[in-house]
Amino acid sequence: MPKHGSLKSPPDMWRVSDTEEEDFGEEIGEWPVDGVVSEEIDLTGVSRYEVRWKKWQRHDETTTTWAKQMPDRPDLIQDWIKYQERNRNKMARASTDVVLEALNILDVHNIRTAKQSQAIEEKIERRRSIDLARYAGWDIVERTSGSRSSSADSEPLSSRRYRSTTIKTEDSESASPSRSPSPIVPSLHEKWTRAVRSAGAARITFTNAMDDEAAPPVINGFEYLENKYSYPEGIDPLVANAGEWLVSCDCKFCTDPVNCKCQDALPPNQERVFAYTPEGRFNFRIAPGFEVVECNRNCECRKHGRCMNRVAQKPRDTPIDIFKTEDRGWGARATVDVPKGKVLGIYTGRVLHREELENLPPEHKSYTFNLDARENEDEDPIEKYTVDAYAHGNWTRFINHSCTANVQVYPVVYDTLPEQNLPYLAFVATANISAYDELLLDYDPGFVPREVKGKRKAVPPSATAIRCNCGAANCRGWLQY
Ligand SMILES: C[S@@+](CC[C@H](N)C(=O)[O-])C[C@H]1O[C@@H](n2cnc3c(N)ncnc32)[C@H](O)[C@@H]1O
Image (cartoon, rainbow, N blue to C red):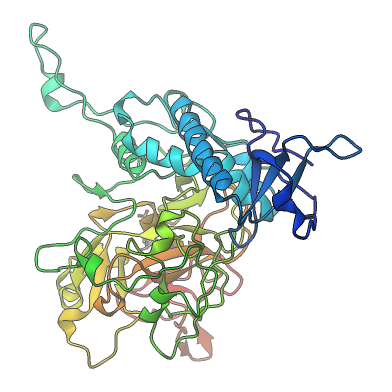
């Protein structure tokens, strides 16, 4: 019965058992039990409990058995759930460190148990509420094996290899000694780190081994938005008050998409399947372009905390490095190995009406993404939207293009109505990606280079097209804008 080696406290609350459930027929109710002593959670999110008998023991002196239900003693499970909650909160108060080692185990059916055992949900909540200014560094202890040595993740922020950009205000440079020192403007990295942490997401780092640029060159006042859009006045996303309109389910664990009511929001021609595996990875069963409808804040499953239909809405747990590439500006990569199907994060930025797109300054163009999953041609143009990540956005705006991509985007809704055409765009790994390999998206999979005099790729497809430097064997030569 192996235990998770990395768990320090309390040691016996969660463990993984190979023991089959024993069949006691009607007898189980007859044998007085002390209570539940541990729990494991299966692939579908259903728990089973290890119960200790009061006096009885087997010949080998073991005193416990595993049971999924105890219809005659629901109080024991209730007591256990409360006891667990108290302990997880205690763990989160003691430290918000998370040992990711246990989550990387290939033995995926234990992941739910491992997540509970590390109080991950509680720690994320706690991170949100902690005074961020007091943090000296990120609090995830990463112990992934096989990742490349350039990782700075386990170092404290202050000893990072990336160059931090602590900028003094003009005021402070000219300040006379008698005046109190002017505040130091936080570096871009510090500002972003605060935003990342308040969203409960994993760390973002900057690395530049190419030249002296300390941080990606975003405009002054760039707003880092980890997991939400910025809406201008005039676009009412209903995010705040969509509650009353959202179609919600009354499932406990959402294992059956056919009967999970929030899936009624899918268009009738879309197959009713969940988009995720029980381990929370995209299962690629939803055809490209079709929308994923995740459970929302009104769904009953929210109370039980183990719904498998909430993934893109959770805080990002993959640490990301924004790094300077050789010939494509800054790019993005994960600092841990990423399995196929892993949902990495969502595209964010300022939402625009599509018709504003043509008046955008050219430098914005390469940071825009259309939210056109549901649109149809005859739709009122006012209800067509685009996200512009030029002045507001997150790390996903640094994902470069490759004609051989390793991530793809799918639209997902959970805080708006699908008909509003305001889905989020989630980035998902389409292959196993090693730590520190660049994350790459095919910006325009439908693009076919023009052929002139038998030569493809020689002629730019438009006046604004730029040469593609992806270096892939199947490179189509150009990025069109
Ligand atoms: C969404 S941005 C990606 C982040 C960008 N590299 C940066 O530093 O901000 C898209 C821009 O990155 C550059 N880029 C991305 N992929 C490229 C590629 N395969 N070849 C050349 N340039 C690329 C182009 O300048 C493109 O307009």
